[in-house]
Structure formats: C-alpha cells, structure tokens
Amino acid sequence: MKRIKFSSVILSVLFSLHLMTQTANAQKADSLTWYTDLKQANEVSKATGKPIFALFTGSDWCIWCKRLEQNVFAKPEFIAWAKKNVVLLELDFPRNKQQPAELKAQNQGLAQQFKIQGYPTVWMFFLTMDEKARQITINPLGSCGYPQNPPPGQEQVKFLEEANAILNNKNKK
Image (cartoon, rainbow, N blue to C red; front, top):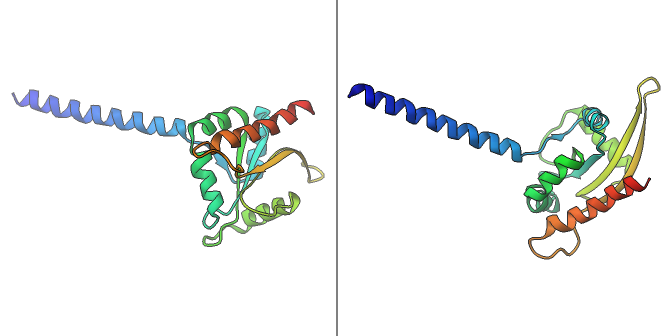
C-alpha cells in the first residue's frame, strides 16, 4: 500500500514537471529575440538574408511605444511575421534606467543617422560593414511607426500591411 501511495506521488510530481516544461517551451516558441547590439543583429541578418527591423523606442516613458508593444508586437500575427521576415533590434532611449555607455552611444548614433524625430519609429534596413575601413553603409528599405487610425483591435493588421509594403520595396530594388 505504501508503494502505491509513493508511486502515485512520484507520478504526480513527474506529470507536474512535464506540464511545467511544456508551458515553458510554449512560451519560448511564442517569444521573440530582440537584439540590442547592432553588430550581433547584423551577423544574424547576413546569415539569414533578413533585413534588420530597428525599433527606436522610449520603453519606460513613451505611451505610444508601450501601445505598439501591447497592440502589435505581442500579437501572434506579428510574432509569426517577425520570425519569418526580419531580425529584431531594439534601440531604447529610456529616461528612468541606466544603459551602458557603449549601448547609449550606439543608439544615439543610429538615431542621428536615421534622423529620428519621434517614438516609436521603426526602420528596416540592411547593413554593409567594412571591418578594415571601419565603415558602415546603411541600405534603408523604409520606415513606419504606430499605425494611423486602425480599426479597434486591428493595429497589428495595419502595422503588418505597412511592414509588408516596406519588405516588398526590398524585392523591387
């Protein structure tokens, strides 16, 4: 009798662990990889042939950035699209948290290069890096921001229409 109870407890624990592992794996499958280092993102871009999708954001203060995250980036449609089409790069400009000086300089340099006027702004581009001359050439495809006047609950649809139009420009070049 003790063996049956002990076996039942062991089986329950193993089953619980199995469910927890499945849940964790499902969450990983639904998550996206956002790079913060341009060089890393570019390595993945070159290896996959996908353009860099650079999000200029104020993650801890920008209301429209938070809405874009919630209404677009967290949606299954965007997650599937992003995994298939782009390499994600977050270029954050927080007000209430510290960043390493190198990251801050990288983000500010890219914001100047792309002439960022407001947040959120997304630019899609390819990079050509000449390591010997230490030159970076940006080949922009296009930009977009928070979708303008989308039907309620359809922000991700309108955003993906704009993003696909930018990717279609890549194919025409």
